[in-house]
Image (cartoon, rainbow, N blue to C red; front, side, top):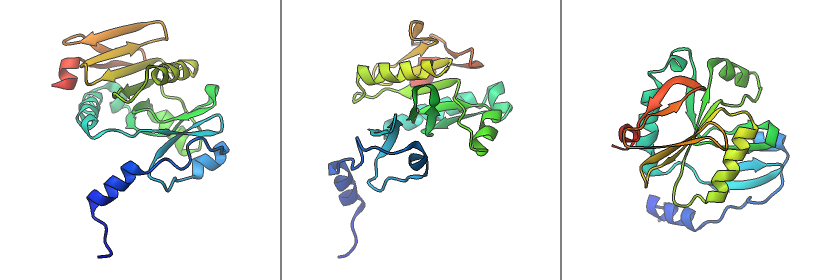
Length: 196
């Protein structure tokens, strides 16, 4: 009788509310902290904000992106397209958790030494719960921090928005080629490859 089933735990987690949303915390403490409430948090100028993790239905998209990235020179040189890694965007004083972020091998070595490199390429998978305001804020934060390319992937609509600045966007559908240049010159994929 003392055991809890997985489905019961899952129901409780869905009913739970994030305990630390809106709390203040210094960056040094945030870097060492592991929330016990089961939620993920980003750090925004000292304030904790909950963020949703990757959805079950997004795994295949991430797998297809990872396999395509493995064909690039950046991958051969030791770079990685990492999912959901805490990343300090120092120019805007925020720690964000992009769905995927590209780090060169040199940046991975810098991270090992405790530095906080900023990825040149970021991917966000947009779910129905994401608001337009949230997406615009993230885009502004990324480009203010010298990210070169941001992809917003919309699985429901089977399209990808490729941003090279806040004002320069290409909308890709069907067999349109989505490019990560100039961040990763040879990383391309079409929505048809991504969603089918």
